[in-house]
Length: 364
Image 1 (cartoon, rainbow, N blue to C red):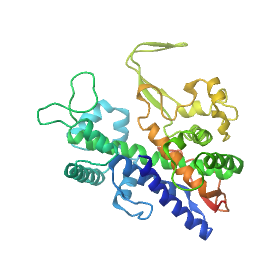
Image 2: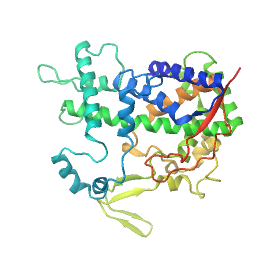
Image 3: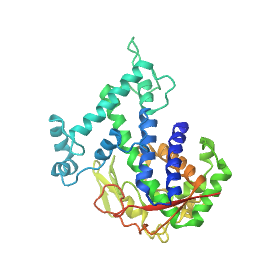
Image 4: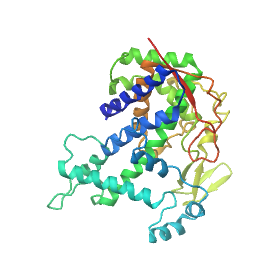
């Protein structure tokens, strides 16, 4: 999928060039969201939406609506507080409190069209998640199934399974990557020394022209440190929920088997006992030596264990490619429009009260 990401990054670089030419500030979230939308559509659906040139594309419009839930809806709180009661009730009436019916119908239609296209051409030459799901769970005429071995009886995914998983991955990938990328650019603009070091590493590994290859991305350790520190400061999930498989004793507290446990990731990320000057952006926290000193549970932006974020590697790859391609060509700087970030505590994901506005300058 690295080629698809680089293709989307080409358009990102072109968009940045227009701001470098006019010397105008830009909304970092809007620019990174367009790149993330293109990458997500390409890597998950194998579809090209070109949202960076066409921000009114129906996919983008509906995606923004789908991923901006209304927390004033009392039925949403019913779902969250009493899921065992709400889930069967809502399923009976085919209702979901997080999205409106027209948004759901739109994405279902998109997935149906893509599935029909893939059935026509057999998915030849396609490398995307949707095709992988189809290939891995395709049932042959004799009733046998192809794909990787699994424990127990194999059941091919139904059309609803594939559509649901596709939409689930889409919702989990688009907004999260663009948020992280915009905050990373904000801190790199504030700290030019860190930005210069990241750019030097990128150029030493990948040069200053053309695509960023998969092997090159794996060698960009300092850029990865910058991303990890961004995710520490702005974890996309403020808390992680798990269910205890067995009774556990935590100091003076007994956690019964079956109890739901909430792990406060954001509190851990800002705990001064774990992190020196926790509100300061400092990528050096993630050198190999520093990471070995620290408890691995102190950094939880993707969760941990067998149920951690399934898209973690894809997200990190997308972030590295986009940031590397942008930093190759441009220096990100603050301007009169740049204001200190203050987060909106009523939003699901970390969201600034005021947009992050930056400027770019070409670098030699």
